[in-house]
Length: 77
Length: 261
Image 1: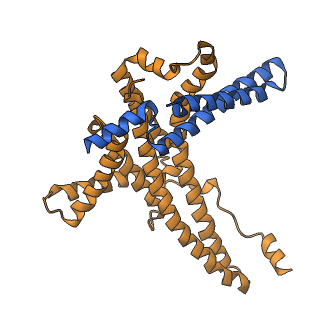
Image 2: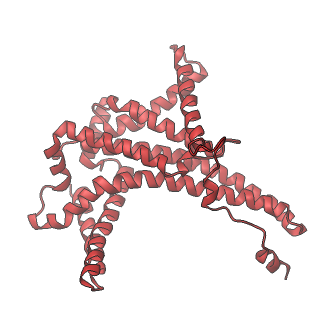
Image 3: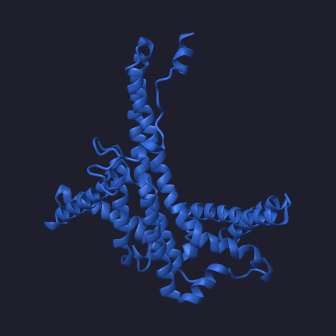
């Protein structure tokens, strides 16, 4: 019993990557956070500077960096 | 021609968010509403059941004891031990309370006469998420110290320094904003949508039954049948959502406890 759990935990690490269901939810969280934060920064800059393209840049940047983050957390073994 | 008349008929009021704002059960107190009573009732029900099932605990369990132990064993082994692993027993009381509380209140949504999931009011899931939020951050801070814990969240090791500008805001937002929000909104949205779905089929069937056209009366049982089918589906969703909120809380605790490699 304990052996099994130790095993799970050491694999799981900090973000529950050992548990696939948990990993799926964490990844979902990262993707949302990336879009919201960098998209929001882009939108704010658009409002401030009166431009129109920065929200798009922010969204792409956010999507890209959250994918990178997901790869760092879950892909890199 | 007739079918167009049906569709354009003035009668049917589709259920809306206002159906969730129930009037006070008695008097004018804003707090004496059905969801509040259901929540209190659920606490009494859960306590009574588990006290009764464990009071005369025997080596050869009675049916009730068996049922109680099965639920407890599920939370302890399949969520607590499996996810948190080493040192999981500390968190089992919290996880168990969370699970039983949420599942009971969810299933109230399809219990005849109760028939309202308290979690379809967003404040209830918010409070649960706040509890979960406090617990997993507190556990992490206690285990690793405030500075090290925050550093572990904000700066992931093995990345060029410039990249932190991109990643750190995402990490911080994930841990302090997205996690509690998704935890509560997922539960809320599922319960809200499920209750609305049942309302549509049941009130729709009722409306069709009382429609003067025979054609509508004949179709009405189908709407009721769908309502019953959806109730079973809802039961599945209700159990699943209770499981998921407990599972995610356990995962967050496990994450806060684990050391950065």
